[in-house]
Length: 422
Image (cartoon, rainbow, N blue to C red; front, side, top):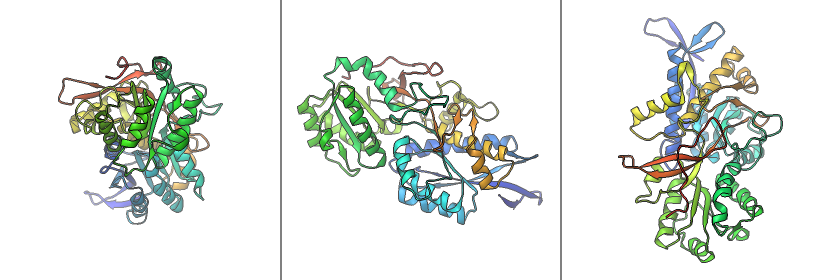
């Protein structure tokens, strides 16, 4: 907190909050949506007079920086926000796990709570576990795991739809028997992609699917790869019917163009991360997005999404569309929810002291724009996810994603699955 001079010359308190998002570079779709959500939540709470600390409402002053999708820059920016801008808290939307490591290290070093959407759980937890300080000031608001189940005793335990595996295997149960059960697994070789490859590959094998080249790590390739022809040829020669994986949008777009050019036409395509955002899939060109599937961790059709002072998932989405003239990005909700969780912790702590707020975060249990937030011992809160597929429209925005499989009563299907892909 700092004291600034107001227009009436009387001292005005403000809560300085930093936000770090990748608004340019390969993760720009994550960052643009996340920053919009953060700003919307700050705007909403400030309209109420600010955060209630004791008997006083104090507005938030947001300081935003762009890490340019570069993990190496994120940590330095966090230090600058803390040491030069004097922020007491840092929030963010969603970004792939590698983007959080530097920020979390700075948060531990200076004991500044950092609240963001950090999933998937396994790669984020792997980096957290390897850290000497174990990231005691980082909190994952709304993430999912690949196939690590929610622990017993949690309200989400034993419920399908809180892991990627339980969601996507629901689709496989429907359509897998109509394939030869041969899978090509494509993942970028960095923490997020490696987590998917090493967990999904063996898990799919146990379900009776053949993951082509799994023992040789075929399809686990460096981010800078531009020629995928040898991998595609191996998949094609093996008769792969299902393409599965996790990688950035531009990375998959290059592979998918080459695959189509080589006559590789799997019956089912599911790509995490790279097929989540309109901006990314539209950039592939032509009809390449048609029928490509991905996880959805938020859209306006999800029930139980609540914000400040009457804001709902629909009204938040409407604000995005009005301001950006673009289809809804799922990343706006994680940004909004991060601010909600911070505000809730400050108000329960009755203090702006970072240590007291960090302690209050541990006992968080609240509704949010991403449904109920409740942290486990790893500072992680699981959110519901569903399975989506891209459809062509007659509108200027030619692609839309629809929910085609859901385990949740509060999140209905909005479209019928397309199988096989043409």
